[in-house]
Image (cartoon, rainbow over all chains, first blue to last red; front, top):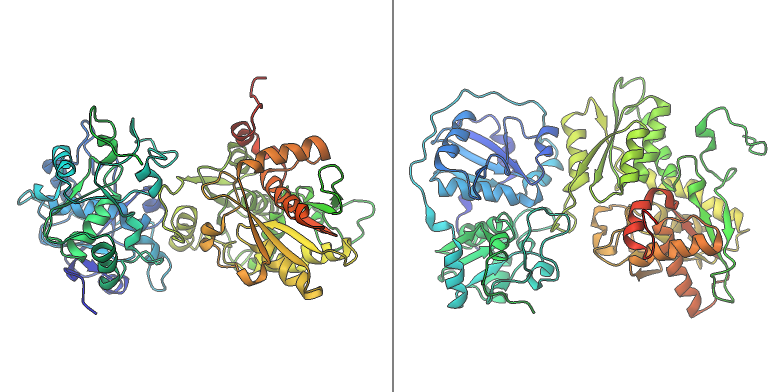
Length: 281
Length: 321
């Protein structure tokens, strides 16, 4: 069986158990529900709130380079550290955090395969409520990689040219039966999907254990069944950009797509845009 | 224990068993001709639902195993719950002197969240899964498990989704009650699926007595708004479910859970909650296809905890009439 394209960006729960105290390994938890970190987290992990710490608090955007440097410096994370990210919902926002680290040029960032749910159910996988203190570091963003982020103009062009767009939301969001899952505060004026987009719900990529499916299974789904092409520039989107970070990770690092972007504006931007073409079966 | 005078030294003596069963009542106006349908009124249990049975059974088991009680001073109970298990556990925890932390999904009706606090529980609300991975232990189970693992000195989690006591409770009490109350004549049992403790326990006991007893589970349509029960597609959270023990699974449009509950109140004098409405609708459909000689329906709880949901789902009801 062939391996993932970049297996080095995934760590197993067993690996993490053995490296909890390894110098230079730092753990970051990012959850959909920030209550989880306070209730218990992997020893040594810092917890970041995606709403207040990973997004700009004034305009709609990811945190600035300066804010990202401050966040890491305060957590004592160094540029040379191996950062392992995990979270709930099969690593949705952990994948978003991973994508941010890649935008801001961090060398060695990895996802915990299986996320928080897998860790929770394992023997010898400790959780604590203790918040470990670290001395601040001087974290510097070495370079910004904007090539992994799609803006709406690129999405409109891709749609027009029928370039590959992957809608990773639930089938009901794709068809426009619902605009957003019930109870969500971030929503849109219109339902449906970007014309030409292929529906591949994010959960297609994971096993019931929350881990990623095997390379062969992933290839069968994304390449054989859904006919995506690793050589073609591809854009993934969802509602607010976290589920699509997950699929972006799968396409780029597990399947080795050369050019894949996460459109973090996603449906909450696109579905509000005056005049944007929408397909609604 | 003499139940004839209904005098009790302690509320736990009121918990149901073969000697003190929850009542079964025959429905007379809404049942298709040629069938008998009887409702087992679980809201008559001391804390208001079928969950009194599992809660009591799980607590006694934890005490027996030394997980709760004098050997673990200060340790309380944490449990993921859509409300009823939480209410029963909270009341019993209060009686036994344990702290209680209930982790509930946000779609649980306000009434239950308020009652849990009124009964003394600390309540944590978890946003409903917005695009969930089937079987994933996020949400309430994830948070409750996190507390139990990270703060094991403070909390133990009975875990109704995996605890065999949740099934045993019905093998020990509900099953024998029904067998005795029907004089062994029960032919059908209608129930819903949630943690599946009730359906598994009843099937094990009653099929042991008479293998031809039909066990029918009634489920709401997917994407429903009926707290505490599940569609089979949502069942991977339960580790207790064995499909071989269920004869038939019937799907009913979830809105009917509420409108049929109102029908039961208006025509049969039964203050049924939505899951009871759903179960009756399923039983009635089976009875329309052929006679149900002696059907027993588990009416899990009453309508009082669902006023706000009924406003949403029953046309014509108004908060300010």
